Length: 182
Image 1 (cartoon, rainbow, N blue to C red):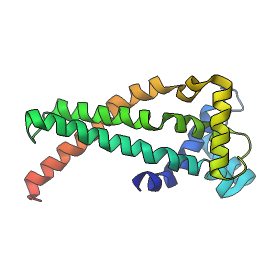
Image 2 (tube, helix red, strand yellow; image 1 turned 90 degrees about the vertical axis):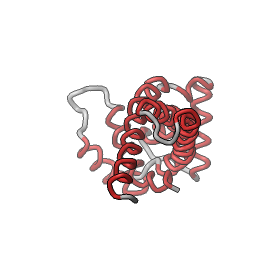
Image 3 (cartoon, helix red, strand yellow; image 1 turned 180 degrees about the horizontal axis):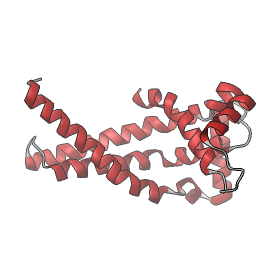
Image 4 (cartoon, rainbow, N blue to C red; image 1 turned 120 degrees about the vertical axis):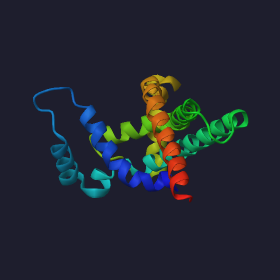
């Protein structure tokens, strides 16, 4: 559920990001305001601003399942040795594991999402049809490795990002529990 709810905001933000990244550094490159206006005026809300919503939902569900499951599993494994007050390094390692699991669980869907959002025109058909079509197109062009293009930088970014996020959350939660008794 959290992944589906997150997609409402993540989908348009990522669509703008992907479209801006798809520019080639020319003097005609568009700013965020221009990209958003163009998508709105040419395609409207559903096919412009929210392009890629359903593939974002499809991506977020396994991504967040992997994220939280790997974090909690790793944290519990550390707790068997170190008790419930885990050292900071164990929280950082658990968070890193969650971040890695996030991308491993969803990366092919993320590649499909980016391609759908980068298309010059909206996809046609049902979400299942256009997602399947894009998956097949990627595999036809690049084989299975095409579904994992760019995975390494995503994994490298996720390690410090998820490590710091989860460690900060856990330490803040522990501190508030001590201070408030809740």
